[in-house]
Length: 378
Image (cartoon, rainbow, N blue to C red; front, side, top):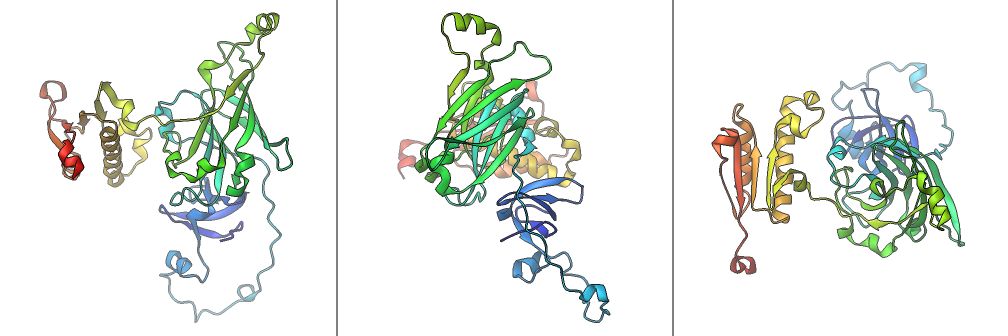
């Protein structure tokens, strides 16, 4: 599917749609929605409306309008469409804020390199979005180089990333990964008030292209909404102050922080709620799990709370927790009832009211029992 500025589109994986206003990169477009915001969206997650395809007819906003066969046609309506000029792709990276969940990430603050498959249903095929993620409270200046076909390095992109934002560098084809996944990133960290002026950081990364063919290497992170192959390029706690530069030069030390990039392991979702070994307490109140909960319609809030509950339960089971307390509040009992219905779907799980002296009537204590060897073998 080839989309052009001016095309009307619908989102495949969520409600709503809008108008294509510009091409950010090959395979990535900016969609202007009714609220006036531009949403960067992969072409694979959009369907063009107003055409003659079955999908277009299904999503068309005018499919329920009265037939226009008998409406007189004006000269303007019968005029042939004028050809449009070729679309010029933008050379600059596109910067967008990280999702609200990034603020609760347990990953160490720093800079990350991410390869995100545009088609999340087929992680090991198709194109990947290459981006730099700034999970810190610093403004970051960067320059990214990668290997070229003829040897040496080529400057792929440079720019700045605000705190808690990511810069979408490009959309990369699989056949280019032998070169794009072998590179160097130079970084400088800046903000108005700093404990020290940090020396520049240089991160070297080299990822074998075969690793992109294994689905297990694509993980879910709190600072991304999609599965991705992520490497950490720099960690804030490991930066060196420029005040040591004279001392380092005197003794022949390095004047830059050189890091070897390594794949990042996502922190378990339940870890942020851990209160003791293999125990956790999860508050499901809207204000505890959603930063902008007042903007969420009441009819959607329950689904979001249940989704958060499910994610915590599954993480607790995988990480071998044995007790998790879910605080649902008193209210009208709808959330508590929905949680109990969901708990019945899990084997080897029992639950009861949490200790009244501490939680009142507003919490459920869930015990996760490890299956016996016999049942596991069956």
